[in-house]
Length: 321
Image: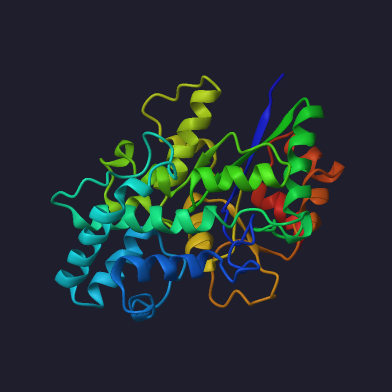
């Protein structure tokens, strides 16, 4: 019996987890980055603001902007001094074998980026949870828990069509796993985060290829899936298994939307504020609550199309337009 796989890839921050919304202590992802910058570089958040804020950028991009918009040599020296004082406090926030080295050598950008990540994660990890379930932080984005459970439940009973859920995020492994645990969800079997992209396994890739909207992170995710399926496609690009066969979901048109377009995937834009797409040219479905989507994806109409391998863009046009 032939089986059909459709891919359901998600960003994390602002798409699965509402991590940008500050918790009871006034701390979310943006605030944690601000605080980490202040600890490392000093001057009461000025370097964070001068670099234009986070703007959905990865750590290397963000540190590059800080160094470009300040006195580079002084900032590097401040980071070096901070690392010497606090290195022993920063273990345990990145899985073994992932992330970059904190050994100060000839690449200060890499070391400072890793330092920023670890300091930020130390701050954020302490915020997970709350005094009660209602007080827990971060909350899942509306409907995400039901969506994730629905995908897994569908896979349990569907003999022909399977969804392949995965997380591709500039977030971090241990933090994401703790969030899934707090939400009562099985953690993602497939996940590629910035921890992976900073790690030695990606040293052969230029920095630009490791950051969304470039496809490097998803290529690694596809390699994970093919290995799990014990499939060998030889010299064929691992991305060939997903082209036209699913969606990537995110909260940013500029990074997540362009990534979906580069992958030939439909873009599910988590857009609870109802912003307009502007000049975005790819296929986009606006989502304000993930519960709106799961019922359609697992409907009889959708499954009947998937059982004969209809490309997902056509399924999306039928379901969502």
